[in-house]
Amino acid sequence: MDITRKKEGFLYEITKNKILYLMFLPVGLYFLVLAYLPMPGIVIAFKEYTYSGGIFGSEWNGMENFRYFFESGKLGLVTSNTIIYNLVFLTASTVVSVLVAVMIAEMAGKYFKKMAQTFMFLPYFVSWVTVSAFFYNIFNFDYGTLNTLLKSLGAEPVDIYSNPTIWMFLLPLFYVWKGIGFSSVLYLSAIMGIDQESYESAKIDGATIFQRIWYITLPMLKPTVIILVLLGLSRIMRGEFDMFYQLIGDNGLLADKTDIIDTLVFRSLIFSNDFGMSSAAGLYQSVLSFILIYSVNWAVKKWNSDYALY
Image (cartoon, rainbow, N blue to C red):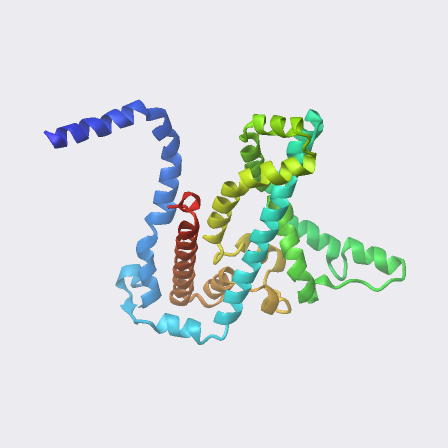
């Protein structure tokens, strides 16, 4: 009797919300095909992979792939680079996005507001390949536009591609520039959801624009900021591979300052065809990400359970 009711309840739920479930279908298929079905491939991290044996026919080699990865001398470097860069990306992106969203929300001109949003969104749709080619043609040491101009004026050319320190600042700038439009829209939509009566009451009480931002807008944005930061922390062990590899490539002069786990794994796979070590590095990355997001979510839940992800 109870089972029949549950079946009727499930079918009723599907029928009642069929449009919502239909909208969810592409997302569900995406994660099923690209995130869950490949998971059995994790076993490669514990095998001596061969093309003839394949994933399940290759010989087990225990923890040899992890030992090789840990003894490669690159573990500490790429791990620290990945964490530090992503922390800088997350902090800079959050601060700038909130500031931009607040500024746009306070703009009076409707058309100027729309134009500002449109121009900020444009970089989001430009691929890193295009950005890399554009940047290289400007700053190439021998034939770049900037250095050609400097040489014609009798000045010394600038060699950006052999200066690692410059890239420690350029990479965060590129990251913020490309994602500012998308991130600020998320915060702007949260600001639009704030009860306008609060602002009207503050205006009647004589609050200035900065006081309204400080005492109404920013506190009301706090839950959105915390949730987006938590989601960003879940990806902190996964670098922006497209950005790093397209802009830096295999430049050995910049490797110590810009190499992250993703680029190390990619090069291991391309140059040595070592599927085992690449999978071991990927598994190490996934486990650290899981531990980090679980720990941070646990800490947030202890502080205020309303702000936790789960």
